[in-house]
Amino acid sequence: MLARKMIFIAVAAATLALWSCSNSKLLKPNDPQPQASVQIDLKNGQSRQGIIFYGNDQQVVFFNTAERKKDSVATGEIAAIRRLSHELDFEGETIPEQEVSDHSKWTNTLLYGGAGLVLGAAAGTGLSIALFARQGDATSARITIAALAAVGAGFFGHMGKQADRQNGVIAARDARLQKLKELVEEKKRLLELEKKKAELLKKIKEKKGS
Image (cartoon, rainbow, N blue to C red; front, side, top):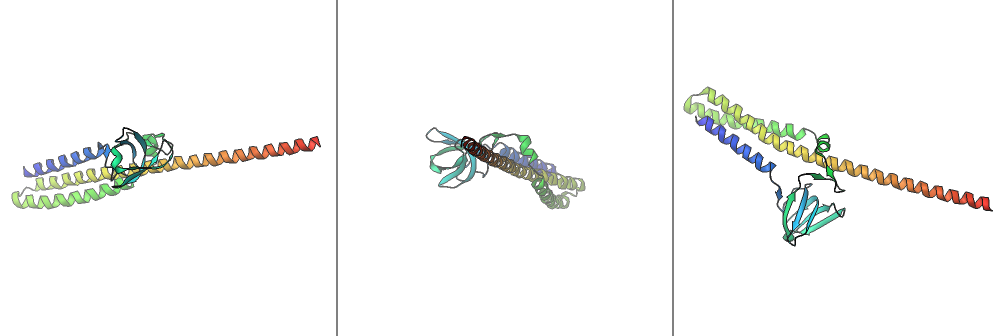
């Protein structure tokens, strides 16, 4: 009976923690999450959207997607920093979840999940030994180990998945930025060709006129 109560408490605590992390939209102005796509609401009623670089007790530094440049706001002027429901690139455009997924890997999910499995199993083993010594119930002891191992794997695996997703956002954002740079360079190249073509036509016309 005690084992079941302990398992229920562990599962409930892990579920609550995951729910709180997943649904947290407000970020601390003095410690916002780097690379998060946010809306910064100011105390004067204005707001700005962008991508967080870093924040401290003095200021929050971010990429202002409207003005397309690095920007900053004094921490004392901020009413709230809200995480957007979508991710932004450096042009202020939305990055679809499928694109984020395409750039995401499973490295942290597997690593964190494996670590959580080991930690959960270790905690379950310690608890099960105590339960077995007290009650002599081998079945409850085995269930405790399995349940806490599963809770540990699920909890830490979710954290790893969030880290992998964030890395996917950064990779997708960088890929778009690289493509934009290539387009700008191509545009410069075409303009240069047009300029040379115009100069050549001018020289040909001058020769014909002479």
